[in-house]
Image (cartoon, rainbow, N blue to C red; front, side, top):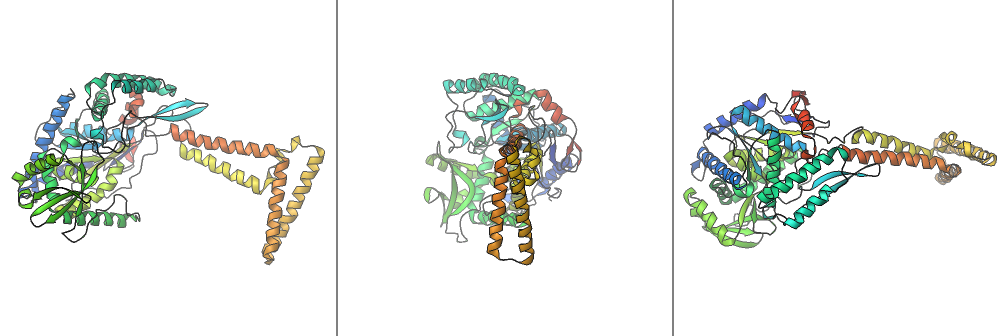
Length: 562
C-alpha cells in the first residue's frame, strides 16, 4: 500500500536555514515500517523468484561492493547489522550545496534513529554537468561568480570514465583557486578546501573518487556517516543484472507502462512539453520492432547511448540505435540462474556496460534495495512517474519515499534578496517610463540650472503639451479622425522629448537609479544563491542553520533534520 501523504507542492525554501521536509518527521518512521510490511507481504516474482529473495541478494551484493569501495579509498566502514533498515539516497558526485546536504543529514539521522545503515549511491553514470566549483569573488563594489572546473573534463563522457587530472594540472587548479580574489568571509574556507583537496588527491584513482573523498571529509566534520557506492559498481551486482534482464525480456511492456506513466503525470500537472519531466521511450506495439528501454549502454570513453531491444524468434537482439551488438537466447535469459552469467559474458565480449537511467535507477533502488529512499525536490517530482510505473509494470503499490532540501546562504548574504531587489527595479522602471511619457511631473527637480530664456522655453513647451493632451482627450472622446489623432500623438511625443532635452541631468539621474537597482538585483542573485558548495560555509554557521529548529515547508510546523 502506498502510505505516502498527498503529494505536496515541491518548492525551494526561500529563507536562509529553511528546510523543506516531506512527509513530516513524525510520519517518516511510519512510512518506513509500512515499506517493510509491504516487502514482507508482496508475492510478486522476478524471473521466477520472489522479490523478497532478490532484495536479500541485492542488499548483500551492494553492501559488499560498498565495503570494498570504502576499503579502496581507505574510508571508515560504518557498522551495519544485516537485518537493520537500509536508508538510501543518491546524487551526482560534485560540490554539494546546502540543499543537497539536507538529504544526507536526514539520511544520517534516520540511520541513527532506526539502528540501520545509510547508503549514498554516487551517480557516476551521469554526465559531468554540475561539478563546477562556484566562487563569489570581489569586483569593484560588488561580486562576480567565478566557476572553477577541473581540467581535462570531457562533457560528453560519463563521470565514471573521467580520469583524475594529472598532478601538474591539478596543482595548477588549486593554485588558481587559492589566488582568487574571493569574498573575505569565504576566503578562509577556500584556503582550507585547497589543503583538503591537496591531501586527498593521492588517495583517489578517478575524479569520482576525489569528489567522494571530499564529501566524506565534510561528513566526518559534521559527525555524519554513510556508505558510498558509485552506480557503475552497483550495476555490476547480480540483482541489478536480473533487474535489467527482466526489463529486456519485457521490453514492449516496459515501453508501454513507462510512456503511459509519463502521459498521466503530464495530464495531472498540465504539462504540454512532451520531453518533460522525461522523454518517452521510442518503439511501437509491433513486437518485431526495436523497443527503447530506460537503460544506457556504455562503452569506455564514449558517449552513452540508449539501449534498444528487438525480439526475433527465440533470440533477443541488443542494439544501440540501429546497430546490433549482441544476441541472447531468450530461454537462457529467462532463467535466473543463467541470466547474470549470460549478460556478463555478452557485455564483456562487446566491451559494453549496462547502466540505469533516472527512472529505472530509482525503480531498482526502491524495489530491490532500499527500505526507504530520500530525494531532493527535483528527483521527487519525477519519481511520482516512477510510482505509476511501479504500479503498472510490477503490479505492486510503490513504497513510500521522503524528500528533503534546504536553503543555506554564504555569509555574504546580507540585505535584500533577489525578489526584494526586483521590487526596486520594477519601481525604477515604472518611474523611468513615466519620466519619458510625463516629463512635466518631474521638471521641478531640474529647473534650478536653467537660464531665464530656457525656463521660459520650458514653460512654453509644457503649455503646448497641455493643449495637445486636451486635444487628444477630446478627439478620443468624440471619435475623431484617426490620422488627426496620430498627428497629435506624435506632437505629444515630440514635446516630451523637447522637455527632457532641456533637462539632460534629469534623464541621467533616473537612468543611474535604474542601473543601481538592476545592479542590486544582480548582486542579490550572487549573494543570495543557495547553489554554492556547503564547504564554503563556516562549519559553525552550517550547524547553526541546519541543526536548530526551523519552520518546515511540509506542514508549516517546527522541524529539524536532526
